Image 1 (cartoon, rainbow, N blue to C red):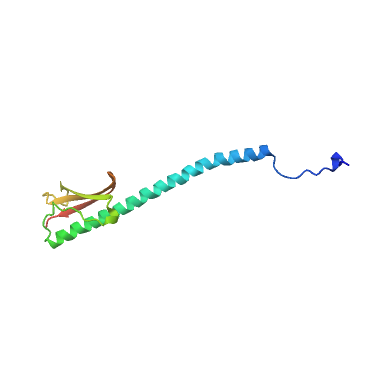
Image 2 (image 1 turned 30 degrees about the vertical axis):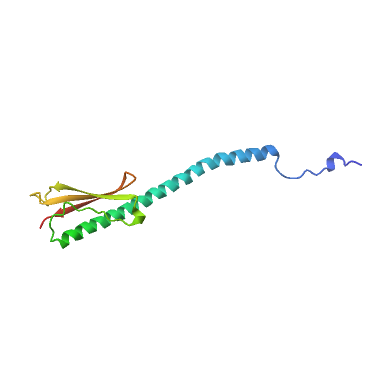
Length: 134
């Protein structure tokens, strides 16, 4: 004997069309979120490179100043920061020297030393240091 139509229990749940619509909407929402996470990863890497380069530039500047102090503040116009630990082999440090004139150095007795740190050819840090001859 078949049950009468009014006594058939319909189970609660989603139809196939509703499930497909939900999956489509969730996919559309997930795409921008995925892009945000990928950009956060590259931003984190760039930030780490800038911080490391800044620390390497500061270290080179300290070496330059200590070398000048040891040599009696003689002009150190050929100094280069060449020694880097192996873990920083992808970074390069270059020291550029140029004449510097300002109200603090009216007779051009100052030299501007700029420590430039690059990685893969891209500049990540620049540290200017004013050197005065005593």
